[in-house]
Each structure stands twice: as structure tokens, then as C-alpha cells.
Image: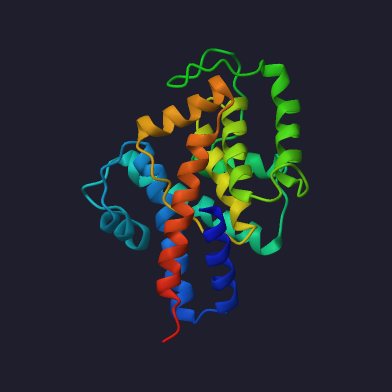
Length: 241
């Protein structure tokens, strides 16, 4: 499937620049796909139409306070990703802190203080004292262009997500931040945002497969299928008239 993904990506690159209306539609789609990924994994039942209404016009009465807050924060976080991409910025400790501040509604980033098993994953994360060093290793990994994953960015994206979860540096919001770095890495390599086709339980199972067995195949498979579907949609959207 990755071979077909590369073909579709090349065709889309050759169709650029897109007309403004098409480019705007793609940007909105990217925002909605990213937001819907987080909502679905968090168990939200909001429809695509409801998410779009909230994205464009603000809260709807059918949404919970948490859903309203998450969508608003994700809008700002995704905007940051696109701004960073336009400037080709590297991921640093400052970027991690800023991303945490956005997704947490303005809270200052404070590292977790214990090594209790992570709820849902049953994973015992590194000791608190080791977190800064682990984050340095993480940022080096995400910023390095030449490594064993150079031939397939989707594989590295899965690793980026799972390695951040493995560190679990903050008391909250680690899953959203892991997806932020995953998406940002792919955006910088010309891939669009996409709907990661996991329910909450499927997401947990895929992450646990990595944490317990060092197996990212479930997560990679979901990324590959999602990217293929998104590129297919973009092929139709950008088809010459």
C-alpha cells in the first residue's frame, strides 16, 4: 500500500498549486480530520457535521463542555502545526511546552511526579528524573532526517507517537501531544492530516502492543490505511476539470 501512497502523493504534488477554493477546502478537511481523530478516540459521538459547525461557528448545544474545550484547543494546536510547518521549525523543548500550554487551556507544563502505571495502558513510564533526558532523545529522533525510517515516513510517524506515549512526560494530555508530533512530522514531509480510524479501545490496544511487545504494526497499519484514504479523497478533489 505504501507504494501506492507514494504514487498518489507524487501526482498530488504535480497538481500544485491548487486553486484557492480547493486549497481552502483541503485545509478545512485537514483540521476536521485531526479534530475528529481525537474526538473519536476520546469516545465522543459528535458527527462530522456537528464538528464542522463548531469548528466554523463555535459551540453547539449537543456538545459537552469537554468537547467544546477540546475542539477549541485543537484548533489552536493545529494552527500552530501549520505555522511551524511554514517556517520549517524543528521540535524543541520550547515547542513541547507551547503545545502543552495550548492543549491544556493555558496550563504551565509540569512534568509528572510519579511512576504509577498509566491508566488504560498499564505502562510504567520512566522515572521522573529521567524525563528531560528522554525528551532530548525524543526531539533528536523526530528532527533527525537520516535513520532507519528514512524510506518510509509513515513508519517513523508511528514510532514518534508511540515513543512519546512511552515517556508519558505529563500528568495529562500525552495522547493528544503524541498525535500532534505524529501529524506535524508528516505535515513537514508533505502528507495531509487524516482520520486515524481507531475507536478508543482499538487505540489503546495498538499503543499497548508497542509498550508491551515493541510492536508498532497495528498503529502503522492504521496510519497507512488512513493516509491512503485521505490521498484518494484529495485525488478526486483536485482532479483536473
